[in-house]
Image: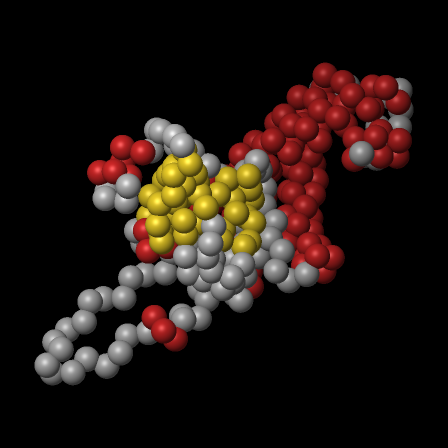
Length: 262
């Protein structure tokens, strides 16, 4: 849609070329810039989970690396003269401003349209909106009780799972199950579910403070959530405390037997 609108509107002095050439040019610009922005966002996510670090990384890397690509496309499809430093800097300004506009729009528009509990992301890895970067308030039942002299030192309270930072503040934790659905991960608790756009492997990695097991290539369960084991012929299911039944694959069965779950 953006490629067609740009080809029809002929911005940035492209009106002197045929519609077909403009459509081909803008299609390449949109596809290549989208793929490069996704890669830049993944780099930013490896540096930090703070939204401004990720977005700033996208703007800087796109300005540095997409500008030469755009200049090459211009020389190939929209030749207007020899390349120069002035032309490069001119294009770099446009790339930086457009990249900044895109990342700001992706942060501001979804909460206005979909509500404050919606998240947006570049590519496969998710990003939380600024309001969701703070850790949720601890559940009162999980707070440490005063330690008496007879009891001695109590065991340290484990750190909350990092995955909770991606969930709404009112998510009814704790997390019992993770299940992959296409490009999303369903995060299940005792009384509700939430979907995050991310890989299951990344979601499991952010549950490192919670003891759990991968029971299927599409399912991970918390150890404390397992209520029992059900068998239907050769098929095995784990029954969770919220009533969910999660299938166990043959690949993960030996590890569950070794852990004493089966």
